[in-house]
Amino acid sequence: MKRARPIHSLPLLVLLASPLLLGADLSTYRGFQLGMTLNAAVKHSGMEASEVTVIHQRPARIQELSWRPARFSSSDTDPVEQVVFSFYEGQLFRMVIDYDSQKTNGLSVEDIVEAVSAQYGTATRSPVKTVLPSDVFSEGVTIMALWEDTGYSFTLVQSPYGSKFALIALSKRLDSLARTAIAAAIQMDAQEAPQRQKLQEQDAKAALQKTRLVNQGHFRP
Image (tube, rainbow, N blue to C red):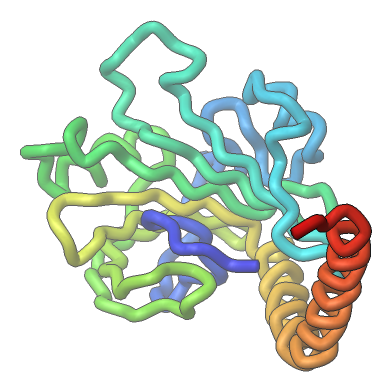
């Protein structure tokens, strides 16, 4: 069910503490709002519902939508390479903004923090190196800055390789529910894997026998 990704998909990153930001709306990004419905997000993105990927079906439905701004713009200056939207039971709980390393080449962490702070307020700066769970990142990252209030957070992280940056926005309430559901889904998949494999082998044998009978009837030496 899982796959290797660039810097994206993140459970609760908040390993830091910060004061509440006054006046900053940490629930929105480029018109997308944490908590909005899947249909509303698809419509706002300009994409099709068929492009939504189901990650887990149970115990809760977890879905993803990958959006590349360049697909809908003639400009080649947008630093955002892609945004991955994650949905819990049809509600947007996380947005992971991957930046194009060529478009951020030469920029310092301070440059990026200053740009984000202009919209979301003063950040907490206390770099923390951490290795996040495998369903989040395939590598360790450094948390460079954090913007948060009681309900939402934005976290700037940097890959240990080169100048790859990502900004993660999440609804704390929905993200907590999603993380619990994802953990349960992974456990259920692991428990059912032997039986699922057995059924797949039985189906494969049945299909092979069916093909054998057809070919046997037509075979001539």
